[in-house]
Length: 231
Image 1 (spheres, one colour):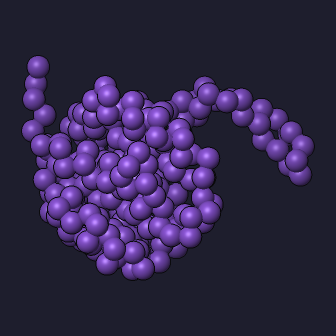
Image 2 (image 1 turned 90 degrees about the vertical axis):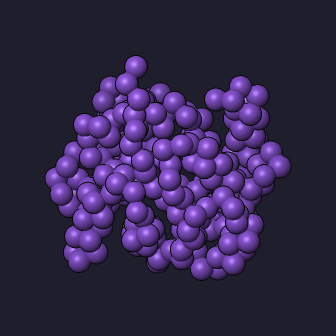
C-alpha cells in the first residue's frame, strides 16, 4: 500500500462563546469526561505524524487561560478576529506547512480514519471536507407552513476538519478580505473566491459540534466509547 507522506498544519479555531449552551464562557473549556473539550482535538492532531504544527486560535478574553491550560498541546497560539473568517486568516498567517487542516474547537471527536481520507484526497484536490448524509426528511417552509419537500439524495452536512493546499486557502482569504464575499465555511470560501469546487469525503457522525447543553451526555458517550475502542 502506498504511504501518504504529506505534512500539514492544523489550525483549531476556538472562539465560541457558549451562549446557546448557557455556559457564560468559551465552550471549548467545557469539561467532557474529565477533560476540557478542546483537549481532545488537540491530542488527536498531536498524535498524527503528518501534523507538524498546531496553531490554536482563541478569542482575546480566553487567551491567557488557554495559553496556560493547553500549554504543550499546541505549537503556536494566536488571537482570533471579530469573525470566524478573520480568525482562520490569523491562523493561516502562522501556518508553515504545504497543507492546512481547519477544525472547529467545539468538535472534540476527530476520526483517525477521516483524517486519512482527507490526506488521500489532497493528492488530487485542493479543497476537501468530510460530510455526512442527512438522515431526516427535509421540508421547505414559509410562515411555519410546509411549501414543498427537499430531495435529500444529494444533500450532505459538512463537518471539520476541512483540508486545503495552504497557498490556495490563503489566497481565498486574501481575496475575501478585500471584498464583500461571504461564506459559511472555508470550503465555500474557496469556491466563492477562486471557483474551485470542494471535494467531499465520508465523515463520521461522532464528529458532532457542541452547541446546546443537551449535547453533554451524547458527547461523553462518544468520547468514552472512542477511548475504549481507540477509534
